[in-house]
Image 1: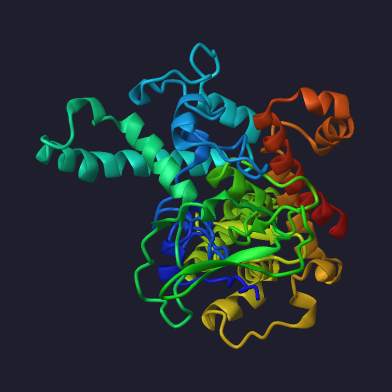
Image 2: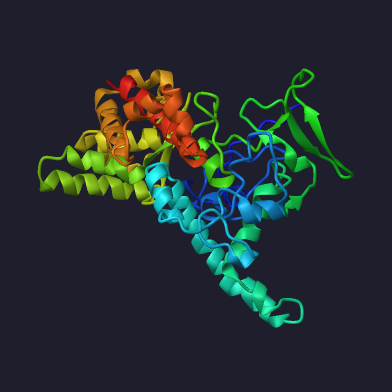
Length: 411
């Protein structure tokens, strides 16, 4: 029987999620569910972006796995210089560096920012822990392997193929379990509508079917309830629209603030709005690097977004009273609910601010929804895109569909 993933917001569980994700700003990690049992996971407190390391994107999620040695030497996601691995990847001689392609294909999705945080974390750990350890054991590590690039490659391989047993619900304060490399178990691919998952016991691991599987059909594991941007960040692939029912789109918290500022008429109103924003920050409802997370059927950060819309839109006298009570005594009404189907019932001022925030968010992408739709509908053109271009297109398109649905609901 499948074990449902749990959405968690405790710091302990966040540390086991993808460090550098933008959602749970309280601990600078991802507000997203725990991985399912048997989900390949990221290193505790850090995520290793496959867009910055030699990767397995061409094969991961397509029913084919390659030996690690081959991936190091010829994977389509190898970095510009893989000389530390003793080979040359396909990026050699390419005029477009990886970071430039990430921005070109994924600007606005959140992946480039997450990868940059990964690179900072990897370098910090290498400089402060790994390199000093190798230098202290020079009899075991020759100078030829003391390479940041090689360390990046090794981290990417281990973390994209390792498993981590989730903590029990009452173990929030414990450190996450160590990752495990499990040969054979890592050959299964992921889809949201999976038909199997991995179960742990004291003596063994077993893959259990969660629904009938016909002979000849592929067995799919689950890596957790992951949006497409998380899948491409961690594993190098995305599910084609609309297959990923766990997909999400983010609206940066500061974008809502900026949208509200656009509606101010004078300096006094701007100062009043900044006062409200500072109040929300002190109440830990918003943060400069946080994001409101919109799913296909729900707002995952419903409390934060509802409170932000309420505070930024309420009349001045009402805000003074609300501030004095520090938000206590307020009960959410059905009209305040941010279930997707309830958004048309929100107060007009809330819908207007939400709509303006969505429009500002859509401006961060390099292309519009119609451009993506034209690419997807033209099979001949789509087939000529590279693997990376196809996967990035699915990420962008899924996010824009969620955001455009919000536009329709707030019209």
